[in-house]
Amino acid sequence: MGTGSRDHNRDAKTKQLLAALEGAGKRHTAQRYAVCKALAAHPGHPTVSEIYAEVRAEFPMISQATVYNTVEALRKLGALMQLDIADHDHIHYDLDVAPHVNLVCRHCENIADLQIDTLESLLDEAAERSGFEVEREAGLILYGVCPDCRQLGKKPGVRSHNTASAPNTASAGETGGGVSA
Image 1 (tube, rainbow, N blue to C red):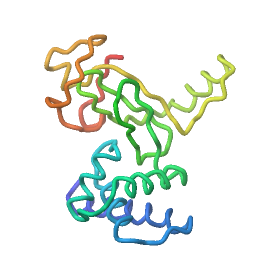
Image 2 (tube, helix red, strand yellow; image 1 turned 90 degrees about the vertical axis):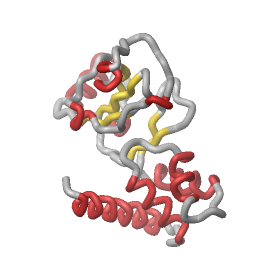
Image 3 (cartoon, rainbow, N blue to C red; image 1 turned 45 degrees about the vertical axis):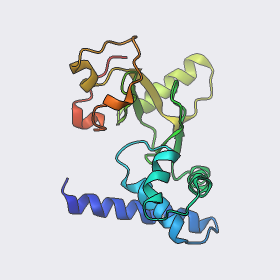
């Protein structure tokens, strides 16, 4: 995908997030615009702290509470999804609200998205066989070792939460989607 296309997608997503806020009666402010723009520009599954750091470069006086409140409003409106990832210190958010698989690396903590055509039928079967009412919008979270960490010799089951040496944040589709769960 070219840079122009990526910019267009980011701008469209920013407008979509702003429209959701405005539709809920929230005023259009420069700070909310900056939060929506930072969310749309993030390549992965951001935390409020990451968005705050990004927005603070443009608005040094913005509070983390303002960023959190904007993100939380968007979550309540269904414009983004909160990911409850085991063993992560911070809550991550996903702008892809359609049911999909989130692959979480136990070593670098990277989160990659994977679209699977049979996910709906898997969720149906899980609900039918277990009696659970499955929250479809949550999709599915799988844990394992990403291709980059596997290449470094990391193994499933042995955790090493060292984000300082985290590999890139490419999506599973860009890395071949290999997973050891």
